[in-house]
Image 1 (cartoon, one colour):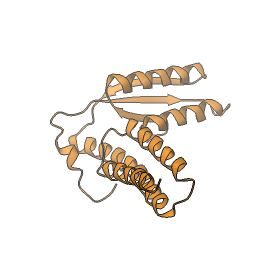
Image 2: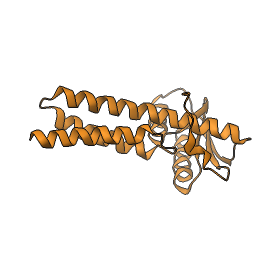
Image 3: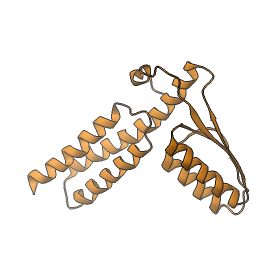
Image 4: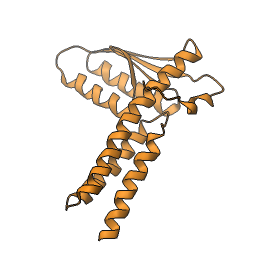
Length: 168
């Protein structure tokens, strides 16, 4: 977690509800474990412990974790869904801040790639721009507590697009 304050959490008047997926999969074959890990990563879950992940509760996140729980069961594992709230506001802020920091790191990587592509020039910039826009969409889809880095990454990608248009 970084040292800056997460002021966007302070506006949360009511406590959030969370949806947890508690799961256990057999070690072999490894394919279901890998597929589950990739799906969980795409969703942007926070891993609380081995086999325990959390997302802020809404109809979409609950449904997605229910689907994954079903896939775990079909692969010979065990899974259950829990809806809960953090034991304290401090715990909730810590969980949200950790999720925001994970997204912030991804946004920083996109920003750095956009800045590098802007200064590098070359024929691959158009492909890089498409990839960076795709990356931004993917991060936004799993970004439940948008950090300031989100706007910085968007600006850097759009600056790259504008620079490319100016030289075309």
